[in-house]
Image (cartoon, rainbow, N blue to C red):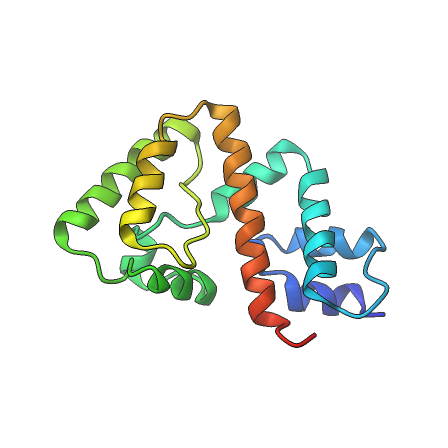
Length: 165
């Protein structure tokens, strides 16, 4: 069995800047067999879903704005940088950047956390369309949608970490 410290060290970044998710997943005692993508994902998501609303909100707030200030300053996590680049968010025109900045500002003002979407396989246009559609959601609906997107991102990250396991 993997130690709590080793588990948190290996999977603590799967949920953006939130190692407590991995720590609680390990503490839940469900990680007894080999480390597989489905098993680790299930344990992490269970810990995330069992957390208080405030703790889950903290995970949402730990995510960077899409094509936002951290990206421009080169301060994204390696995972976020790669994910955003895969969708072309590192190659925006001035007009596209202005549109993302406006939507980011409006979204955070409305919901209190950044817009979160699993960008793998999406284009800039797909992301903007989702952004514009979701900005009119109700607060509870968007909180649940964002939590679901965080879990999708976690699955994608785990798949790259445990490809053959």
